[in-house]
Image 1 (cartoon, one colour):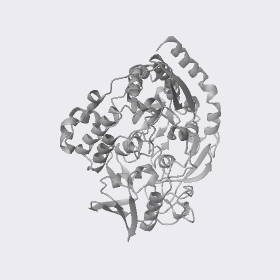
Image 2: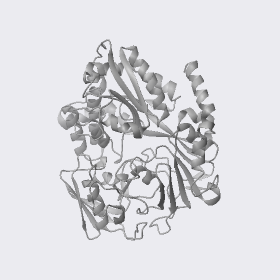
Image 3: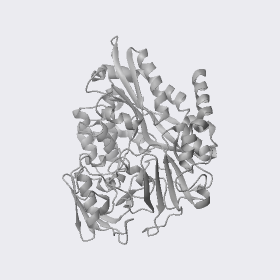
Image 4: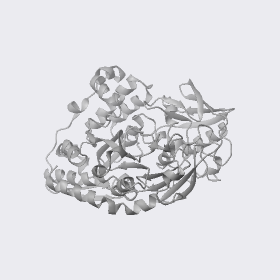
Length: 523
């Protein structure tokens, strides 16, 4: 780190207290009153991003509902991605395309109505027919019907990961009143008071706050905490200040730049299945030329970014998948041998498949975007721009809040977009992420890749049962994606989660779907 960068970090740290004043006020508001969390058994949470879709559970807002333990799914996953009972107690695969799930008895929704197989099937059918279906259903034609106390799931083609799909927070089971009366496929879905979890969502303060209360009739272990008071605090310095001053009890994603200002006993480092990746637009502009994509790839000093901007709290990217998926490195080591029998094509590997960089013509202009919600990205993009300019690109930077920039990124307004991306998404398996981001039909394709080899590799991986053969196929698909240079993986993140003194039982979940549970409490 050079002197100028060190000085900048010092300035950011010194300004953190002032920058956090607004967030501290927000965290101490709600039903608690200032600083009353420990006194009344309520937990104050400072979250990274505000809702994008009014807490619609069919959007990414579902992960907030899951982290607050207010909305639940038929299936849950363990740390290794294995399927476990949730609102379904057991299941069986009847044939290649049919699964039967038995719904848990004695469960009530927060509005007092009973959970039934009919309601579970209706929820899943609504999600599958929604105008923008949950991304976990990308490429999946799913139908659900009730038979007695069972939900029978049928897919149009064999799908070995149906249980894992049903664990997605975007497929949470809600009461009938949560859905539009006419079941319009683009109508709003309201989770307020309609979930099944140990906490009831009682107040929604737009993009500022949310309030939850303990649900006394919960089917499982009752919540230890009396309730949750949530504030959305996009500013990283403000979240750090809220933790440091004791105005928040649990804080999402404390920025690395704030770590030195906070008692290390309040921070928990969690390796994440999340990779900071530079997506290059292959559809139009400079990066439609593969040689120029390779030039951008080679221009970036990834190790320098990790050392300078993350201060060791990240890992240089080995590929799209990082150390939080413990099997990925092992599979890369023997993937070629394991893969050879799948379609007769050995793994290409990045070294063999990499394209040589081309010379950047003078005046080659590109627009580079990222978002401010993760402060490290906004800082990294400055260095990336400098490195790209050093090899001949003319770079225009566009940095905004994520809610303001996502639509432009998905529309192809950028030549390059720096994104922090979860690589296992909802199913605990990276195939869904790869299909979403890199297949020709992907719903979150920032690089607009159209590649038959990649599509074929992803199709094979998606059809295999969970286990070593599937994992080898995933590594082959990763190699074929990287060979296109549509994406430049930079680093695998670790997240600093803030937990105030006295907080116990907060989940440190690499998949970012659990945070507060029935066991979470303030001493």
